[in-house]
Length: 425
Image (cartoon, rainbow, N blue to C red; front, side, top):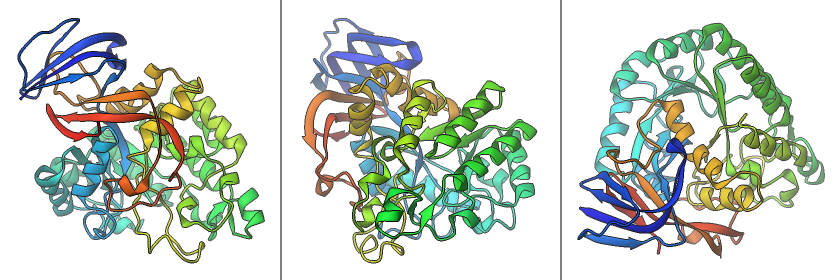
């Protein structure tokens, strides 16, 4: 199939390109990037006043498959990702059973090939059953296709075991994605220790439950010389620790989720389960620290932590409903609205955190719109304003705190391997 994109503004951080141009895609490959291409094509897209971007890469998602397919499947999660502009997504291992063995990795890889409209890369668990008691078959899972290891949903609290896993990851050339949480300090908390916990009489989660494990894992990363990535950073102290580690040359990277740079715990005024996430929404000081971390590149990646749950699961007693929200179909709009429109990041810097930087973390040949590369790309309108409607999401689940929020920026087309897989025009 031949697709010709006309007169769009190409923003490609990998080549520091920002210019109005045409892009020709032929048989899945970017064939030409020139000012004026006139070739007969199967489809011509008018992209005037629109952005042409590399396909986004999400290093932190939950597809709930296998075992929890009432919340999401590989097929529905991939479709939701496509409508959010993501062309490659990395599936966390806290499935049922956990992604801790060759067979489960093979199941995800095979099902993604058959059902997913985007590229799906599985992440392997660090320990068997995510129990923290015995290291999983990381070597075997890597051969079958995992892109990283993680115990996401919890931390590996056995420091000796985590260090051994980091050494294996270093040998295999893959990163360790760390969910930083000292569960003994969480102690049954459900919201940030602050305004919401006080006004709603809910048990609070302190900042140190995160930052203590961030510090520990960075010490281990230095000791092992492995590649450490800190997931869903939410606290001021974590940003400060990561910033200092980078100054010291430690191989650590970090991500922030759109909900953490958009909302604070002041937003939680009732017992709506869609405001419950882990880490929780933090204070205004924490949010401002995250913005500074994005500005100075202490935090170089934006990830969604897409975590679907059913409406029934998110209803009822706030202390018992599960943590997590969906994120694919709101990420671009929230980032454009809160970061680009407000001058926190330039459009180039914003796009880099969704494309080039995650590609570098994973060591994959993605995140670029260049001649000869596979055509994974997005066309977006940064100027269109609208209200988020969760009922239009393509995810199986609709658990989002952003319903009816006015945002600016919409994904119009998502192209994967040269095929249009999502169109919202």
